[in-house]
Image (cartoon, rainbow, N blue to C red; front, side, top):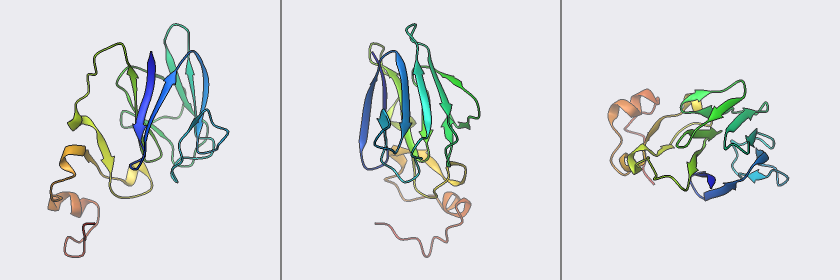
Amino acid sequence: MLKLVGTDGNKYYSFDLKPGSYKVGRSKDADICIMHKTVSGSHAELTVEKSGRIVIDDVGSRNGTVINGRKISEPTELSDGDSIMFGLTEFKVKDSELPDRSEVSSQRISFTGDVPENSIFMPIDETMRPLPQKALRSAGIDAYYFRYG
């Protein structure tokens, strides 16, 4: 069974993907509802074909849809393990019948910005360590004024 799994940083999501078309967005009318401020009311459309082929298309969202680090502007085919960002929320396509090929260190989160292109992404296991000065400088953050918590 195909699944779409991910997080908005506060909540974990898991959606079963059966053949059909799914509206993705913040609207309560969306088939895949992601309640995060960077997800548009109508953000993307996900189509699962009977063959198992999955295609995603951004439907004019404000913050875009990013697949494996690339913002899409046309329908794009997805594969098991692909990373999908709707705004600043991150998801993966997962075939629950296949072994999970991702590792914890490959999961990424954002700690700054509301636009994916202006955000810094780092492995989740590194977020518990003090931020490297280079990362802080690239984000335009003066380390002296940066506060944890």
